[in-house]
Image: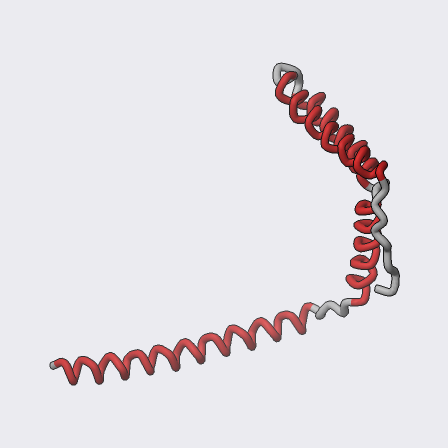
Length: 122
């Protein structure tokens, strides 16, 4: 996380974000307008518009900051030491056993309190 991105917003960013919103609106309106056309064509058009909108959005300062964040997150995920299957199984069995023991203890306490209250009430 040593990389820092300064978010200097330029006037062009506003134009780019406006274009992104316009492309999304065209996709929604076009999908509604061309509802009689084949679903395949509409989906392909929406995917194409989404890709173009994403590429434009990634050219903004916020988009570049998002790319840096995604790259850093990917590096952090690579550093994680994932447990092996036997470790996962063993941990799961320990948790199940502990839950059963606590459930039995709570059942015993509840039964004891219920027995005491029914003895007092009569």
